[in-house]
Length: 285
Ligand code: UD2
Ligand code: MN
Image (tube, rainbow, N blue to C red; front, side, top):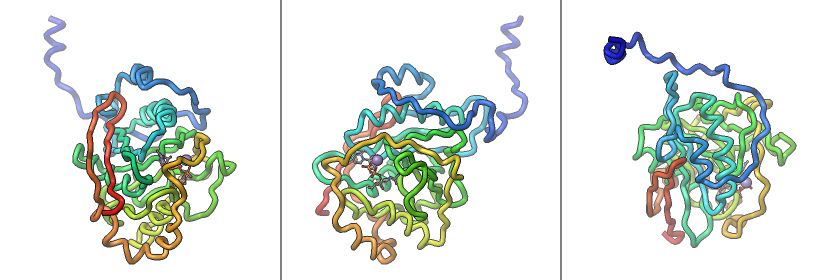
């Protein structure tokens, strides 16, 4: 008799909305810098669905978020990020999927084009309305740094360990930024023309301003990150043309971006903790 009544569920109402200040949240925390294997990590986070998706089961999340990580050959950074970021996103009740967008060798790294390709490919796989572009080596260290989108594009970093928990200049817009689907389309995404290290983040910053959007930034005591210390990657040497390119951001914006991103998608793999997207970029195209 009891089991019959359990099999006849009439739920009252809907799940309540996920609210910001849940009791699960602490404030600032010390990140775990242990490098676990992907297998060990996947046992820690069995509640993630294949491809690295998670949906809170006790409340309705306010948006569907794609975390896009531009990547090449930094497995140890990725594993430290997963160890810290997944629990934080769960504590914050975020409905998310992790995408690692990986540029194949040869050729210099192109972080901007990876943003565009990640946005385009993630959008084919799910109806995401919030995109957070996230460097692989940046570990958030405050629970109250919500992985939400705002009414304007947002820079999540207000202080970095390597700059004594400050920033170098006010228009900085690198590392971790959020855009709604509409906001990213409105600025025509990122430039595809920056090969090698540097400049693409300042270009993105200007593109936001050029389209009349504001750059928001997290509160100083909240947007805190530890960057895993690293040297310069051999296939990502400083881009000598970055200063010249930055002079023409405005003229290029309509024709260089999401609308013109050219790459080949080599594979899409649903791994236990993330969706791996491998692309190749032809530099001469
Ligand atoms: C700064 C910016 C970064 C970017 C870069 C210039 C901040 C906090 N960071 O970081 O967002 O604008 O300058 O390009 O403002 N990557 C790989 N493999 C590579 C090369 C790069 O995975 O071989 C990815 C990875 O996600 C990495 C990111 O690209 O975190 C940025 O590269 P970086 O860490 O070498 O640059 P960094 O620390 O000077
Ligand atoms: Mn870095």
